[in-house]
Structure formats: structure tokens, C-alpha cells
Length: 98
Image (tube, rainbow, N blue to C red):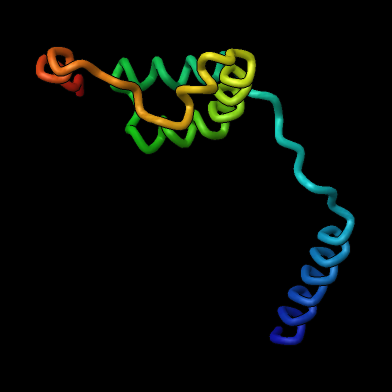
């Protein structure tokens, strides 16, 4: 019985080694705006936790989509590195929505 278990483990390791060496690098798919919107709407409806929404946005390509939009808009490139400026009256009246 023990010999059979060891043989099974060795066979699995051999297969994993053979498959692992032939795999190509993972290709990253293009951003999917539909999935991004679905994830955002789940958040707005209160159906998903913040961590789940962030994970979904990341895997659906939010960063790539935003980087592409900024690259296409020269005015946005200047603001991309810093925080948006908010006037004192806006800051005083701002209330986060939870």
C-alpha cells in the first residue's frame, strides 16, 4: 500500500514536471468594460464586499483600462500623478457614502 502511494506521488511529480516545462507565459486578456461595470454595480447594490469588488476590478482589467484612457487624454496625464485639488467649501461639505 505504501509503495503504491509513493509510486502515485512520483507519477504525479513526473507529469507536473513535464507539463510545467512546456507551458508558455500567461497572456493577459484585454480589459472587459462589461465585467468592470457588473462588478461596480454589485458594489452599488450592496451585493459584494469591498475586497471582492477590488479583486473583480483588478482581474477584469481596470488598471489597464484606466492607463489606456489616460494615455489617450493629454490633459489627464498631467493630473495622473497627484491628487485632485478640492476647494475648501467642497471639502467641508463632503460626506462619504457607505
